[in-house]
Picture 1: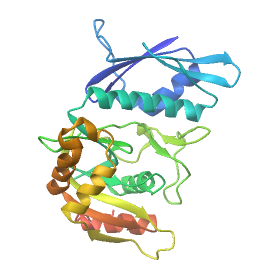
Picture 2: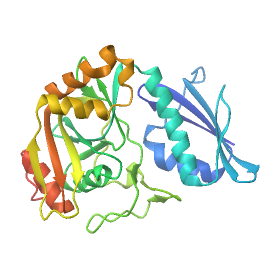
Picture 3: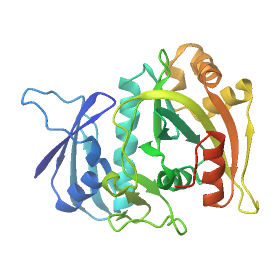
Length: 279
């Protein structure tokens, strides 16, 4: 039996893990957020993860004080653990405005990629990491509204399918029944260590029929509506989060990105931000 501790959004999470395979999955996905706790540290969230001997219920996620949640495969197990943990953290950190977005750093600022599920957000983020962008998150972008800084969430980048060349997956990729996870130590870039200023948001839409990617500026009103639609804890904020969504949109540059070929998309994003992609 092993005990792991993670610090996520300045909150401490303890995970007691009974199985070596589960331990490997957790350290691959959350290893960059692992901490060595003080002996007196009391966790904000406490989990017990183990294998079950119940038919069709091979894996179990059990948060202290709640009923166990079972799954029959490793991909669903990771999904259930992350879903429960992030929902609880959203409740604990109601001061943050949580967006479902990938977050990358360039030139000291954060740039968000927002898309519907399957819209190419994580794949585009992975490609941009090969061109001088650094990694902060591919799932959650919690924003401090007063300072408009984005908190980091550097878990393993999650892909549903393998990206094309030259952005193939590294050897250390964790394969589950449902998803592919790239650990931070296998990424071709630096990992962001602290919250940074939000500078831009790209609303990504993949079009497989498009010959070339395109970018257009989005008005603050339209961007605010899109920010709100991709929020995860809007109701925790004043005016049901509408004012905060508009404030976020007004603070930064907002674009609609119709992605096409990955290399061409990266070049267009970089050109929009004034970055030389010759490297």
